[in-house]
Length: 280
Length: 280
DNA sequence: GGGTGTGAACACATTCACAGCG
DNA sequence: CGCTGTGAATGTGTTCACACCC
Image (cartoon, rainbow over all chains, first blue to last red; front, side, top):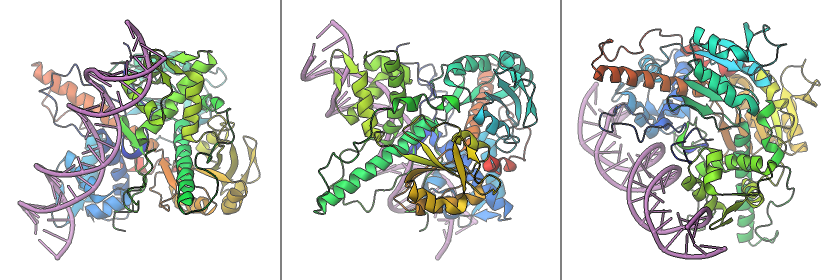
């Protein structure tokens, strides 16, 4: 396994192209018998967004939408939206639009939301606390059914209505409660260990807030949310903008210093920035 | 503005392709004078990951790495890594590898981390609390310098060492403290309003945890982190796997029920899932 | 007319594979 | 000889534009 075939999750970047999981497949698949049902990863992410927009419409008792309207509500352009929807079937009416209720149903079905997925949160620090208090996590459909922490003082204490269990019991509790999604909100050090236990407990999907690249068997899906990376990407854009501004004023004939002098000021110390998320 | 030119942030998906921001450009640019310094969005996200891996190596007093080693540490393949690094210049030595310190410096420079970006967190609920307690957010380089909330009981109370200010003072405080990055951790309702104020206060980058599509001027960068979407994407993969398994056993000649009966069980109620993140 | 659904064109991203340098 | 750096090939995702249906 020399940096090939060891493909696991990546960091992502939320932009124009887009997606985030780094699935496997490629080799191993009989190639031919492939499910045509292959919805592009990027489209799946957007379906979830459309679903939210649709729920909003539904609450306002709006029963029909056009691709233009829905696209605007979801913040994408209508061509993309129509293509995305076409991956799940043809549920629109030409000349009219889509029926909100139908679309909601179809997207839910596609995303597998017709089945409940119980969630376990590991690491009841600041973030874990926040997650547990979600009150049923992302709304229902994703009930939090187990919490874990290392700290003996926390074990037994109910957070958001659920008593915290000890990390040592992850395997047992998860298989018992049929947890399908595990959320890792621990410091980096414990993350891989926790991950291994979740997997041993039968968890097949992991949402990882710890800034580590987790090693998992190929049938486990990992998604990573990395605050530091997000911030650094934003930082990049600030820098780029400043550069452009500098370049522009240069062109304009202004004399505000030579190009290349734009940002260089403070330095070092960013290294510690990477020890960061650890204490979330 | 009919769903075109109104491009704002999207939801993302962290997968193989990947990226997340939905920048503008396209029209408006004089085309020719474009900065060749165009690093692919996806590569930027990974640079941040490499940076973390390099920091780790640096702490272990490792001074040199090959692309294979670093790629393994970052969870990507070496070709991708080399290409990514090539966007920022040629800092490797053929036959040897890269000097850790040099690479750290160059990536920091590229990401604009040589300048400090002060951060404001709005919405000191569970999540906001977690973020504020980061103790300098993503590690330093990103000092949290302002906190805001609506709740009068919170105003004045120090969280993570910084006293909470009232939302009404966002504009004033942000410009005063030269905040460049704003983090929105409020319920959906308040998000757009808060966003507008941050922008008015001079903030040019926003990290948004509220599940809304924010409207911002084109010179403001928005990144969205949406827990519900993450969960739903995971859910999709569970469903897909089950489908495959079912299809497989079908092929194997087993008779565990007809295809199409795989997941359909619980239903409805997912709608409320989208009212979720609101209370983070 | 109005709006969906989609092939075909395009743009972006990843991977390959190898030339070239230390 | 090993490893970087990169053009060229491939793959994935987005946009265009229009046929087709209501």
